[in-house]
Length: 410
Image 1 (cartoon, rainbow, N blue to C red):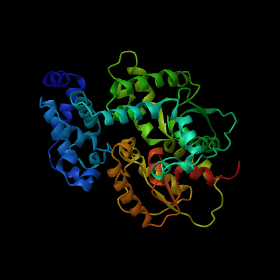
Image 2: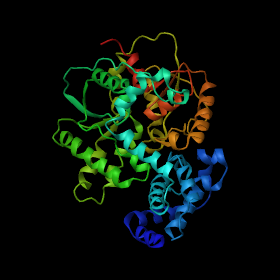
Image 3: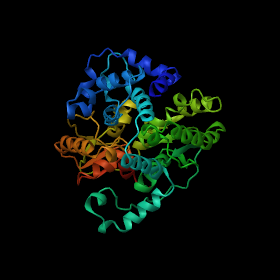
Image 4: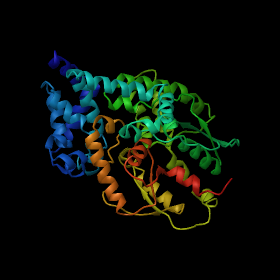
């Protein structure tokens, strides 16, 4: 049965793509030098080359085991390995395909199934926000480990009401508005200062990344289609010129819509066009930098800023350097630190599913950042922000929140 399943999958378009990706690998091992889990564990099967070997075996008909699943689960999908691959292996896509195939062959244990189902449905469901508010209300009475993951409630501040000729849709995501509402309101204020009106995208669903990386491919596609139905009309009509995203993980997923829905006759074209009209906030503000710089407050005491670029910003969007330049242009005194390329361990649901590895990676990241003695740590993804803040007293925030604080009172 499992061999037949592998055969069917191998002959599908995704199976063919997986075989093409595997075929590019020259087994040089350069990828292991930049793989966080290989650096921590030193196991060949916990590095990209070993995982490619495991996926290749499954594609060739070998029955997957719990051990196969474990080594694929431990992958952060940070795609850092792609930066050192001389053959251009798209490992991020390959590991998602491999996980999907293994998930169909290996039954998970009940506790693991329950946890993953809770993450899939809980983080993306409508009851996440009220549950979080309840946790915040009783935060002081919660056990310390749980308390650390429940942030204090934040005042989002005013939302600009001015009408502008330039308008963009803002994707708000599933957990960010509840965990840190200040990010979206800061985005609206900064864009208003740049002469752009922000309108909240009508569907506040998950971008699909949580389900996608938990091997729920069909669930991810459902969310992608629902979002396209909600967002595309405003862009197609010219009401809004683009979809702007302030969470780099979500931006990376939306940019994949065209690829993921390429065989869907009803959605392929719209998905491709929406991906093309999706912008990270840094891309938009880079074109407005001169106007915004005129509104930056006079420099006070120099603030030492550490910028942690999420893996999605570095390896999927490839905007880490551009974002750093943007911050510098607004007066940020960026302090360098070692290993900025390594993942902090957040990686979507990874910090919940692989807590020990995630904590170790966070400690390593914060040790490197701490050596630079920053006054504030900036990032661009809600998962990284919450994960890092749980391990340090140094304030951690989205860089657009910091920029909002640098602008003159409007």
